[in-house]
Length: 365
Image 1 (cartoon, rainbow, N blue to C red):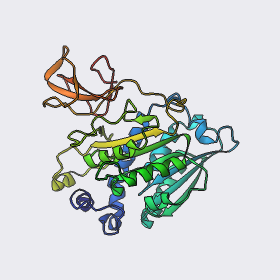
Image 2 (tube, rainbow, N blue to C red):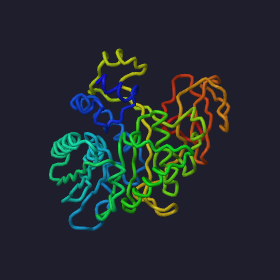
Image 3 (cartoon, rainbow, N blue to C red):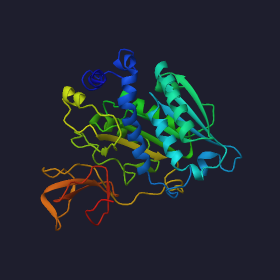
Image 4 (cartoon, rainbow, N blue to C red):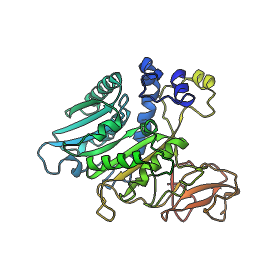
């Protein structure tokens, strides 16, 4: 696991490259990274502004409407060992009572590594048997690079769900002038494959590079309603020339996950192993202004920084502290008008980056 960590953070080895130690240490990767990446995606799914009731099933638009046999199609790009699709199956399992039967889930898994594809299929089939008894699962695998796969003409039915977990870092969408030809091609290919009302969801590590790759893609999809993380459809106010601050969330793993104190010590990690950082982008495949089922617009502001003592951020509007707030500590929130807002941080405890707050007060929701 230490070799995997160093390969990614120090040598910047793409996971898909055969020289990356992931291919010699698949079990270590599965044990340590799969549950973390799964939980990143799962937490974002819980944060999406679902229009249906919390226990509602998958939206009818995703299941073929009134078709006798409902089918949910998912495109998982750079699937690795299956974290992205596993998170969607877990979400669907929680709403199983409202999903029409019979149901077929068709997963299209794309990855360059044959061993990763084999492991992903085994993971997904085993989990689906336990989590979704009675549901038919079909896995279609493509041993191909993401861009090579998307460059091929799509002839099949559209997908209700399209996206990836920890994949955009491998593609390096950033261009010298921010407008990347690779990002444009990716956005076009995604829109050609997504069904009306479908969900585009990408989740990346909460790093500066992960955020920049997501925003490069987001710039090409601003005409679609943004579901996460933004309370607006305007350009990201943190996406400037320096990217001194970037939008990401902090999620704490629940009890029961595997932790290795020795790995943390040897790798020199300065954060709690139970604290996951993530950046994500989700959009609904509908023209702006259309009815936004199965999602509803998000209301409020989103906290996009940890409490900090710093000079004001250029362009950020400041709010005077209220009782119980520290005048020397601020957090940044992203507002529905597409601007950054400096909020006094509560003196009794920190805001959690990634949480939502009311526009009129300083309490997270």
